[in-house]
Length: 259
Image (tube, rainbow, N blue to C red; front, side, top):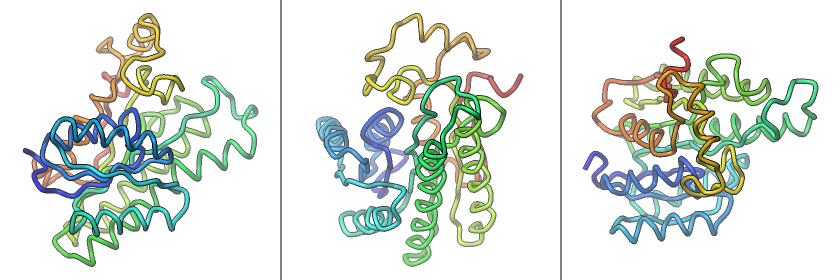
């Protein structure tokens, strides 16, 4: 029970990595506030957590809106007594795989930066404020990307994720004296989530097996990255097993960035 009695907020918990993390964190004893822009998706995640005997609640939130993020943190404290872990997971992909910089509109840039970067900034800000109010430290896990570590995955998208990666390290150093740890999970290509395939809200729905094989071939280990892979990495970073780990960008990429 790596997260026994810990209060956790997970953004983007209605699908993909967020849902897999909510399920895994709850299995490890956490009380999870499942935050998502789509309430029906968040409710379904809660249903699955409770079906396994876990504790969870749902809340609607647009992470690009500060009042929504602050409200999610406050709701976790009101319901579970405190905040122990903030997992800033939500993100949106580039509008079309393979888009070049000249293909992007201003609106594309605004959407990507407001969700992927502003949303993580707001999540970090309000988590840090709550950790300092209650005392005793805390943990932030962000979803970065290997696209923020190397030039891959689209210029605009990669730039927002590079911002997340740097934000992670900067907040980790700034808040270390308050025993607030901040790390990021940095996935490579994940074909079996709705991040790459809009209809794939769970598992491999809507994804042809051959697509998974093609994506997996990009990684030295030869396997595509799954939501569960990322959830397992996030669990480690969120737990006391990583009590001396902060400012780390953990690639979950099958060796992609090691080449």
